[in-house]
Image (cartoon, rainbow, N blue to C red; front, side, top):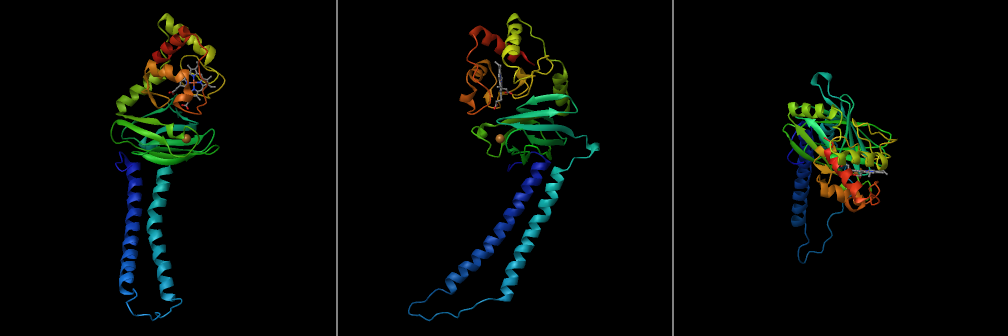
Length: 309
Ligand code: HEC
Ligand SMILES: [Cu+2]
């Protein structure tokens, strides 16, 4: 947060500095007067006279009412300006990327309505472009925070909040939920992957293509196991696997993601760990333990999921 990597983060840091400067200014003056009074008016040995008792001073009252009002106005004007600027939709001419962010206990859903892409846990964005986010939640209040890019904006059920952010340089930026939302709130991590516009376009093309079809016999078997056991909650766009709901993340392109559930390095061993007992990784996660499958079926399922590119 102290090393912003884009315009929105820089604006927010400027506000933090402004309020720190004002606080330091007030502290220095108050503490200086305080120290002076302590020394100048302390009781001297042998002097037991009671000092002159003063009650009320219109001048002082006005002074310490007006000065804070001025200081708060200095803070309020740029704060309100930035708040509205950061929530506003960037003009069409800037070709912003639109993303709908939906928070779930304890995962993030990212939808690019204009590009027809739905994904989870990993938010891909192009560098140098404003990304306009529309944020909401399906269960409780969460808060979207990418410390080095922008935040924190609440995601509230039944409400749409908006903000934009911009990354100047390619890189992977950590994201967090910044509003206590349940047992695994502290594990509700995600990543922002900022790529050069050409690279981002490649990613978009890859995601828009139908998911690669299972190649080996094992992967084909895995697809069947998935259809039988997982489609109640998960869909895989482009693979013709769509069930009744989206209680869990869309797993299209799962094999390309860096992390499982935003936490574990994406490899077969960790996938096994996750499926076997999601609660061990994320207490309270709304995915049941998959401990009823035969080893052969589980292996096939894992091979299929990792093949999704
Ligand atoms: C009752 C609903 C439900 C069922 C059934 C279910 N899941 Fe999940 N799954 C979830 C939820 C919810 C999450 C998100 C957990 C979190 O991160 O908090 C999840 C997360 C995952 C993830 C991590 C996804 C990511 O984006 O990193 C994988 C992989 C996964 N599930 C695979 C499976 C497989 C394979 C099956 C079937 C054997 C299955 N799930 C069955 C609800 C379900
Ligand atoms: Cu949360």
